[in-house]
Image 1 (tube, one colour):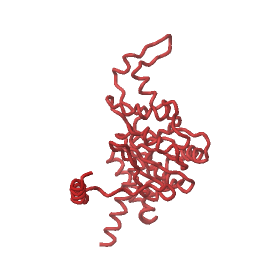
Image 2 (spheres, one colour):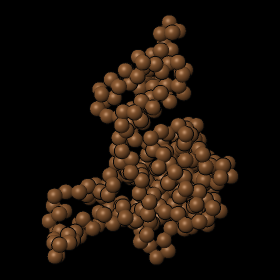
Image 3 (cartoon, one colour):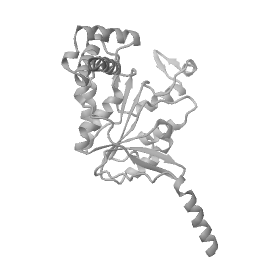
Image 4 (tube, one colour):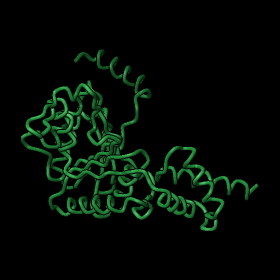
Length: 289
C-alpha cells in the first residue's frame, strides 16, 4: 500500500477515534452471571451486566406454586436433567419479571447464567444460541414482556429455536419468557372465520393454529393472576418492613394501602412495592424534618 495513503488513513483514524464508543467489556462467564444480547449488522455481542438488586425468592409473596415449579424446572436443567422452556404469563405487576431476577440471584451460585434478549432482537436469536452451544455453562435466554403484532415475523425465529429446527436448541440453553398474553400474538374476530365444527368438535382455522402453536412450544406455562386483598396486604406489610421498620406497618398504613390499590384499580406485588416505597419514604421525610 502506498506510504502516503497509509499516513493519511492513520491521521483520519486518530481524528475520529475519540468519537467511537468504548469497546465493551468482554463477558467472562466464570465471574459474570448475566448479560444483554446486542445484535449488530455483522452479528452480535454479549454485554455483561451486574445483578439489578438482591431480590430473594422469599421476598415474592402470593406466587408459591409458580416459584416452586420454576425453581424445580431450573434446578433440573442445571443438573443436566430434562427441563422445559417456560412461559410466565398473566396480569401486569404480578411478579413475572421479579421472579426471573430472584431466580438468578438464588441460583447463580449453582451455575445459572442468564442472557436477556429484547423482543425486537429475536430475529438474531438463532445466532446467539449457536454462540452458546459449545460453552460449558448452562444458560437461560430470557425475553421480558414478549408479544408480537400481526405483521411481526420475529416469532418465526423464536419458533425455530424452540422446536422447529432440525438440531433444536442445545442442551445447555433454555428459553424463558414473560408475557401478558398466554398466546403471545393478537387474536381477532377474523381469526375465527376459518374455524369449523366437525361433528361436535371445534377445529380451529389456520390463523388460530399458527398463533397457538407458538406458545405450545413452551413446555411449562405458569399463570400469574391479580392478588386478593389479604395477599396484597401481606405483600405491603413485607415491603414496608423491609424498606423501613416493622412498626411502620400499622392500622393507618393498612388503610392507606387499601386506598392506594383502589386508586390504582388493582392489587399486585408491584402495587404493594410502590405503596411501601411511598409510605416509608414519606415517613422518613417527615420524621427527619
